[in-house]
Amino acid sequence: MTAFAVIEDLHAGYGNAEVIFGLGLTIEQGQVTTLMGRNGMGKTTTIRCLMGLLKPREGRITIRGQDMTGAPPYAVAKAGVGLVPEGRQVFPSLTVTENLVATGRPGAWTVDKIFEAFPRLAERKDHYGFQLSGGEQQMLAVSRALMTNPDLLILDEATEGLAPLIRAEIWDMLHSLKTTGLSILLIDKNLTELSRVSDQYYVIEKGRIVWNGTADMFEANRAQVEAHLHI
Image (cartoon, rainbow, N blue to C red; front, side):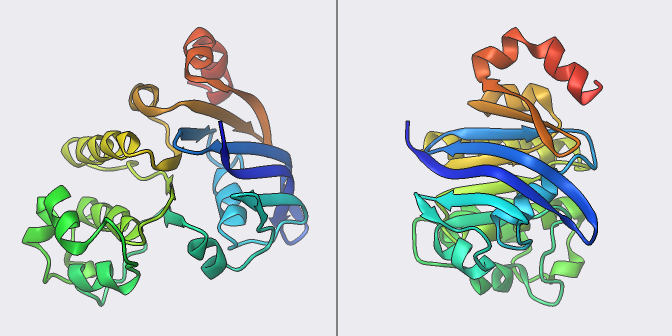
């Protein structure tokens, strides 16, 4: 197995508050890796460090073997990493089509392919971001990340708070993406859906990884994992 991205001994925080304490995580090429934990445990902070949005205090982040610790976000994106951020963050004053082409890079994912995958967006292609429902904005956020034609797609709570039909549509898309060999890092709480797509699991608690294992190990130790998550 070849690692696409590796986080080693990561320490990070905000001001005087340290949030991440010596965290380690490996995202294997072509696999779906899940990072789970209760709110406030450091999941988004880990993603911010990986994306270059927050400079680590200590530790090392490599992408395809290249040291990317503290690299700016544009360099991380250029290395093939796409992000679906928590809270969607679509451009409200741009249309659906403009949102897609604004960050698009050449590759298999085109506007036409996005509209084929998400017909709802095709119907609203001339609507502005602020005119979309929350679920439609989330579809657009996922699609915008795909338009960068990434080799690693990161989704931070991409299905939280969505209507069941739209949530199912996004999970179906993730199932399809897995078959293409795309590397994926998921942050989500839906254990049922995660168990259908994830290859590797990490559980974070108070800024530290307290459990990690393969899909088979997850099923065998599900009660232990759920105890960490307070389910």
